[in-house]
Length: 296
Picture: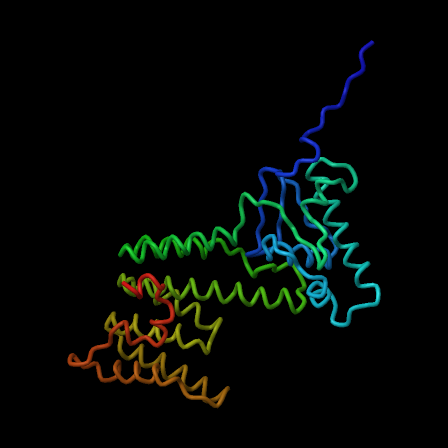
């Protein structure tokens, strides 16, 4: 009589699992072979996000404490170890190990100062975004503005909501989220600048009108809309954009628009052929040009 032997669905104890992917530009997702390694407990999820965003670098225990607790408890070290254990168990399950085996411990390793995640990701939305931006830099430096704009839009399309939107971040992750939001805004403004240079005014006017209510004091958005309207012969509408921003700044913040924006307003108002409005007049123009393009 022959006894059937169970065949495992995946190799046991793999140190280089494939495929693996992570997303942070939306809800946190980390998978190995289609198996999620995201633990259900919120603090363990925060810990995983912190390790993931540090890209294989050691995250010190003190940094983890600041992220997880406003006032760390006496047993903070044990609580962190418990979070590490939860992640390792999820890793072990994805690797085909039972319990919390040696492969899981190597992928999430304990260091003298803290912990380090060494999962080699095949796909990462954040890494892909930065690759696309680098490709856009090269295309813009080579003069292919349309292809550069398309690459930047592809990078923007990777966003699936707020970064780490399903987490309740502590101060460390919050700072990382702010950095990601600033990166995204920079990509957006670069793509808008390219589209202005490509004379895509009609499509930009609608997009900018939709963006401004989400960031009502952003002068770069208002300047872009003023320029696009002016370049399509809608000078009065461009001036109205300035008046609306000026009133909002005065009424709510007690401020005036910046001098560069006031200068743009002056040139639009005069509409002089001797001193025409140029794209270089936009107050944020120099801030979004890539280094290669600026050096060319």
